[in-house]
Length: 137
Image (tube, rainbow, N blue to C red; front, side, top):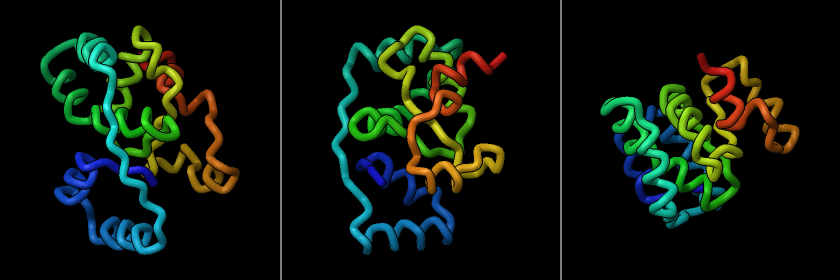
């Protein structure tokens, strides 16, 4: 699992008891990698420029750290926030640098993440931001 200082800060504010225990176990087993992501300023600006309103822009800004960490590692985001995924998916239509980011929701039974993870968590088209952009109304 890759994480950044911004992600640790967010986890500390929002994590449940289960998530706290899970994260501690991952850290004890050496399964947490601290990354110092830096999103290209032009890419970040292009993403924010896709915001339809101030609320969308705030969501993009608040969760940009997830995208930064994904781009610095395996191009995968695991987040319960479908609103953020939808806004980044919309941005992926014009910001090609993020179109192939795999974004999964571990709280969604229909995504069948256990099966996907067991099979090696290979990138699949229906998990990409670009696919969600096409699937959204």
